[in-house]
Image (tube, rainbow over all chains, first blue to last red; front, side, top):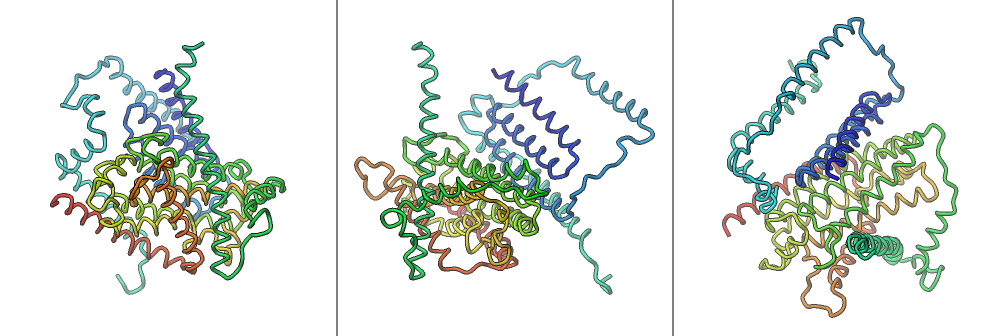
Length: 172
Length: 329
């Protein structure tokens, strides 16, 4: 049963990702992405990660994608844009992609399940609850790393604001 | 045969419970529209609906029948599949949140550990219905409504989630039943008193999330005709209305569970365990209607200013204060 569910989810995620890439209309492509995110949330649920699933929907489906839609609306692309599918050098690109695929599958060949690291067992996680464990680790053990990540994101936001700011004459 | 019945029984009970909940919720939604017209009528020195049935009590049913028999129009140039899909997204996302709300200690469909997050997630999904309908209609008015809705929902979602963090911190849980139990164990019995800031922010954000007056800019009649659902007719139009009122009921129910003590009351009412829950729910619904009859619509920049410059800082302050209290007390 679990394997069937995983198979369905994997297939649906792959297919919706492909549809999102190949959709001619930007809105539809964003919607396929929404389907992808929902399936991803279900995948987290099958791993008993309720918190992650909920956050996935709130952040990605609820905020990021709505922002995408907002941007797409503002630039108002109604017509399908048709560009040539392949560049002239596509045989080389195929070769490079194939090489990468081979390189990526080498570690799979001698894959073996890792030994358990750390003290958290699935039973312990279920008992204490995901949210609590995550919160304790983020805000106690890895506080510095967490804060640095926050500052980095803030810098990125400020950079975006500076880039799109209109510079009035005489201000420079 | 008995074996099969035994394995299927829990599932069947769940389905029956879900159907009962949905039916009761639908009745509530239908009669909220009636209550709204009646209450606003009296507030404006009118009588409100009083022709269909005694005191107009059958008016909602007549309305549904009328909407069902009307022609279902799709504007030329509309994106058909999205146009059909949009009202259902709104409605389903709104109605699904009901599953995690504990009406009574022993009646909650899905007792999820992250119940509060589920409610937030579904309320953010319900905005897709509005945004997509605005785009799919291929109409300027609807499009503007959709744009406004997406900006409004993103802004107020943040404030709403932050206002609930105080409750999570105080209760130490995101399970809605646990939150109610933690509330009754706390000194004030309800979180609305120690979390007064959070309660205020939540109520304002909830009105904005459900696109009700004074934050009904996505459907502002006087500027956008009816905003995102201007091109809808017949029962699809009705579905949008249904979704809006579902949103009202769900938001009020969340407020009741998180801030007003859920199903607990000053004394037990024998035979009706969910008496207090419903009483509080009706009081909040009345508040919604009251606000609509009283306040004029905000201007768009005022709406954004209120969300980002007042509500979000206030709820952040609330989190800090709650955190300190939690550590010190």
